Image (cartoon, rainbow, N blue to C red):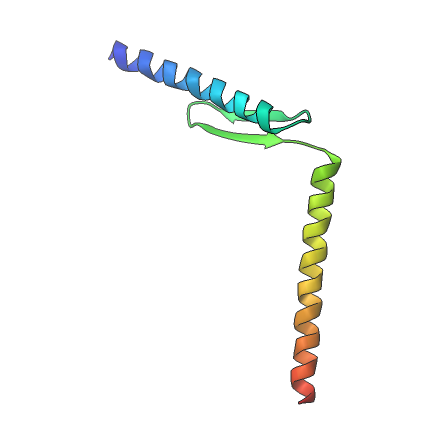
Amino acid sequence: MNLEKKEDNSNSENFKKELIDNIKEKSSHPCVIEANWKEKAFKVICSTPQLIIISLSAIIIFLLKILHTFLHTIHLIKK
């Protein structure tokens, strides 16, 4: 049993290191990492202008799709 616990701890430590290294490599902006190491679940919270732009782009695309559907429906009704 002791061996299993040691192995779990080393796996957990390796996971932490890999996760943090991965995030540092991929992001050039400061992020807050909320993690639950036991379940190997994590959430990265970044508040940057890039995320705001991405969010606005997604909203605009969504609204354009609604407009497209609306215009398509009107076109079908006219026929």
